[in-house]
Image (cartoon, rainbow, N blue to C red; front, side, top):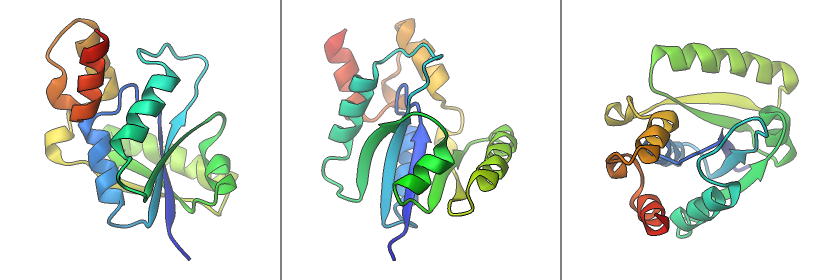
Length: 158
């Protein structure tokens, strides 16, 4: 049986930290589904369509990575697509505390899906989508925080 994980998030935008977690996850899993969560209450800087296209282009040469979007609870969604694991990245102890709470709830929702935590590379530990969004919004130098194809796409639309 192949090991399939989802890597959920809003990815607004998808950072080098996210890419690092996917690459680390590929050492453990046969397949990773980058699952863009749709949250109607959030104001996104980039549309769902933009984020989806950017991620599909980023992973076009790796058949082990696919990109989808979903609404609702992550664990039941993971189970519905046959994923046995939820991959999450940790940068800080605060991340661990937050993710631990979510993992316990996910375990209550379905025993078929387990959470797996991966430490980010320390060079990405201070990077979050929220910070990068603000840098982009206020015209700061954001390029070093994003995979090259994504920052080039953002620059092209500016």
